Image 1 (tube, rainbow, N blue to C red):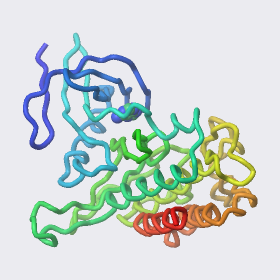
Image 2: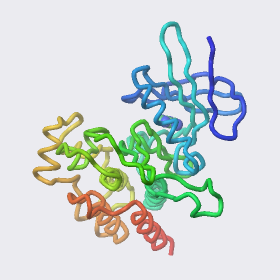
Image 3: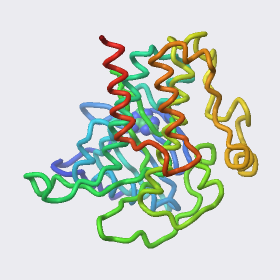
Amino acid sequence: TANTTLLSPGQTELKFPQLIEMKARGRFGCVWKAQLPDRYVAVKIFYAQDKQSWLNEQEILNTDLVYKHPNVLHIIGAASRRVGVETELWLITDFHELGSLADFLKVQTMSLSDALKFSETMAIGLSFLHEDILCGSKPNQNECKPAIAHRDFKSKNVLITGDMSAVIADFGLAAKFEPGESTGESHGQVGTRRYMAPEVLEGAINFQRDAFLRIDMYAFGLVLWEIVTRCSDIPGGSFPLYFMPYEPELGQHPSLEQMQDFVVERKQRPKIEDAWRQRKVIGSLCDTIEECWDHDAEARLSAGCVEERIHTLRQHLIS
Ligand code: ADE
């Protein structure tokens, strides 16, 4: 079979990695742990019908600046590979042994210090993606990037490194907003139902750039809540089990109607216990969560603002 491996900027020939073990299965295919001669890599194999996601994810991850940000998954290469009559679409990236934040929280709790470190690096990553860095605004002309909305932000799509930093992954649905270009298509309800902001659940369409960034921030608030529930230092103790957002109220497979009723009509959000606020730093984190998932999209905090707030909280914790 003719294997073609397209490489990310600055890289030379790459051997085809050997698949070792399937690690995750998602809407677009599955993720494998794989072996190169000198290291492990992750191989995401897309279903042939999801070619658009494969192309989109490569385009986003190969964007100037994005491919070298420490809090965004690092792309190594991409390949399309014929297996009999089928075509497999491969995306090769760094491998993170601990997997996603959701995988981690299912089996472990986090100290407050780790929870804040992870949350801050996750905010740094998202704030970097959301930021529009104009060409020529920096001495090096290549140091520019468009604003990028993730559009499927959730704890399964944020990986965790050995030193408790966040690495944002899964850019199959992400959108770039080049300055001066209009966003022609009206993107409707995409992403994962459980993490859909009220305006998405309502089916509002024709969103502009800032609306997409605010939709990411709502989901970001839900992920922060997941982290706090599994923080071993919360007053009263962490949840003994990991719950997805709205899982205690709506179970494992809420319908669109259930989500609309709970989140839009009744304006409910995941429960924040009063006791958690007995510890000041956690109280401040809870305030930040509530400002991320505000019903009014325009009132939500920006990723840059969340980054600053969590940075300040970490300094209070250290001093
Ligand atoms: N799960 C999804 N993507 C992954 C990656 N790059 N490394 C480890 N686990 C993953």
